[in-house]
Image (cartoon, rainbow, N blue to C red):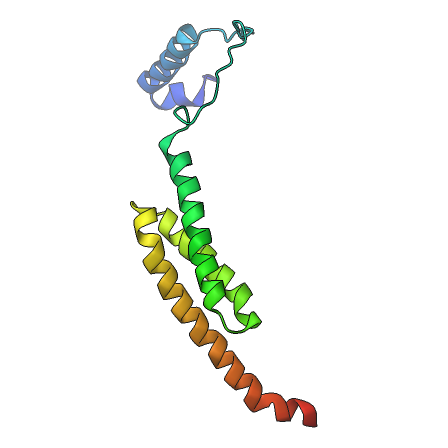
Length: 140
């Protein structure tokens, strides 16, 4: 009578549980680790020419050239030196936005023009604020 508690309550469940455990042990396969060294052949080298580069790489260089041309034009038109760094940031932001679109070279000029407009307005606003608060800074 001192048998298993589950056998006392429900002998069918106990036999089923033991049967599942034994069945699971029979199905388990021993785990073995096999170390296989990679088989490598002779070293192969390719001559790199313009035809071998992927299209995205060629597009990236054209994209960078376009960004540089747009930035140079904007920097030449900038009347004050305090616009130089913000214009460079605007060019980088426009390039980052355009690069994630389907036609980056096509959309970069328009995105850059928008960024330049926003940047010049922001720099002008900063100039006005500085001129208005200059007297307060001197008084402090």
